[in-house]
Image 1 (cartoon, rainbow over the protein chains, first blue to last red):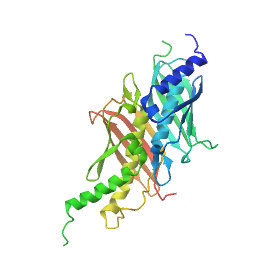
Image 2 (image 1 turned 90 degrees about the vertical axis):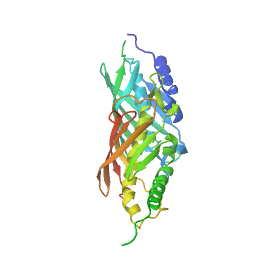
Image 3 (image 1 turned 60 degrees about the horizontal axis):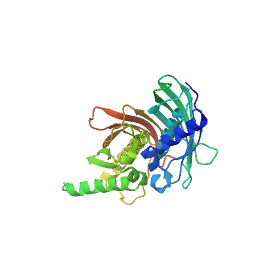
Image 4 (image 1 turned 90 degrees about the horizontal axis):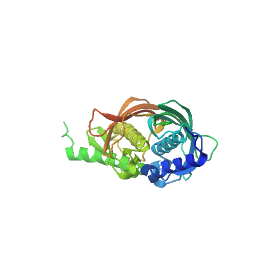
Length: 145
Length: 161
């Protein structure tokens, strides 16, 4: 199996985000990627607020961002999966997101077997302290086929 | 003995409290989630929309949409359960500011792909203390016994600091 070029990986990742209607609904933007890593931004949007008293984004929106970013990291792994789906994902919320700021997630697919990919991710809003971290297991469809 | 409160007044009060809890959160409207109520039992309903899809080839609901649905169902159940006692007593202030629990962590298990149909979820508060609560939530579509996702999470109660 030929190693994917960076351009091929980027094309896969951009397509992976662009064709997902729910990612479009959240306004997710592709930031960057490497071999088994991905970075995706969720711009500020009033409609995503979960607590009207504080203006903090709903955890569910952050979860969706982390899930998308983690899935993208699986797709960019050099083993070349054809597809992936989340088996489980755990997220820990360290602190509330600052109202008005975009949130950027970074995910790393740090190990794959023939059928499973293991991923960790962090989310930040421009501050040094992470907003949230996540770990998950993903299925691998047609790796190296 | 005083006469029992008319049933219309009881339902009106409970429905108004629930509508306020759900209607106050923009993200719940963004996803289009509504809640069916039978007494104190809530069922969260996520009506199907094309923009909830994550895998257009299957097609299947986006894992993030499913997770967001489960987290919303858990938070609303927890807030509802902690509102209930006060609401049923005379002390209830219908215009008091919304005080929502905050998610500490959430683990979502995806059991099968979410189909392009309506989804339902019910949450159970397994432990509710002054500061922390543990909630489990199950989601299904056509068959109540065939879950397509479930989640467990810990939440920080409002005022707990």
